[in-house]
Length: 499
Image (cartoon, rainbow, N blue to C red; front, side, top):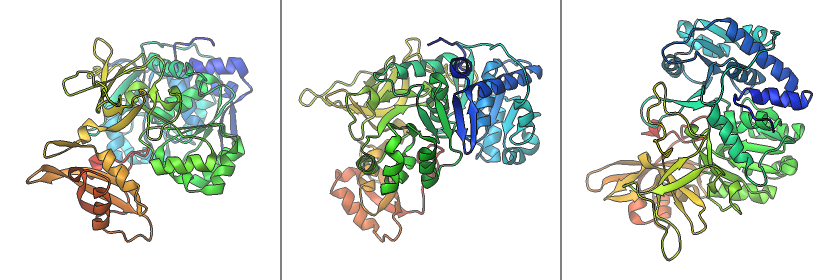
């Protein structure tokens, strides 16, 4: 396979190897690799013609606030081919959230939908391309462009959701994005090949959808089926209609599908690979899905800062319920205690105590925008802030985020454990556990619970359920019922909003 230094040259390589092959499908639209490569050239030429000056923070930034449509791919790869920096943005952001990303990144150009431009008004950058309007003119230009930049050059600024304070821009160079594909391709057998048709339903403005989805399609010269807005039934129809063979998804997708019985089984007949990431998948949903489809859900773990994959059950001999697998080739992982020392496995059963995940690999970012703060250390190791333990085989299991740890009378309570017990109750759709102040124990556990429709389960019943499955200090002392929990674009419960 021809080596590339700039992510946009993946499109050029795919077009050279099979220009007539479909690159992207969206509803009734089919875009070949040759057509996509031409559009990428047109975008790169149009942006270059603007003569955007560099500022004190480097190459000009171009913000892209679009849903999962073919134009996103043309704009994204076009920005990179021109040697500029892409700043993918959630098009559903409020004006305040949009303004923060645009102001912080210093974006000189915005490619967006009409609602985004309307929300920003005069706060939008002076150079604007609107989906369905002048963006089409940009895509229809005619030029052949030489790729500019690559390697350690900054490719993408991806703004993390931020558990504390405003989102920060993770600086991902071309090297990191490409390295993650090389690492995943080194798994035997390779998870994705050029013959695959991938469902692209995870938002492309997120590291998972952007690189593990769209980037993987380009790296392998495969075909991507774009889904703008996830709907369980519509997505199953798209899987059948377009002959999808592999799915990269997030827990809410698999939870919804797992409840669809025969409809799921029929749609999944031709799908060989299901991968779930971004947050842990509920064990009951995982079991329902596997029983219905006859296929396991491969689970992985990663971060925006790692472009994004660090571990996967694809790197393990088998899929263990609740496990995030083992480090993928080219990634090193350690579990460390509060003093930074490696956690030692128990002598009797081989299982380790929980420890913070620290990792290193060529797929890591260069720190946070604009000065590279808080990036990997001189030795390449980076502390993730996530807590996990390893079983006797070396397979990893996520416990929780360090910042979400609850301390009850000095004892550690990991919210994910409490949430898993609550979610196992037949009357519970979803739950979130939080630490709240307590006059005697410092903190106590409070649970926010979404009941199944028609259920009248009480707080007392759920607390009793927890007491049968958890040590007393881990059990909620209060339960509040809510209609829904706030989620991020990839399905994570937004604990900051709940606090």
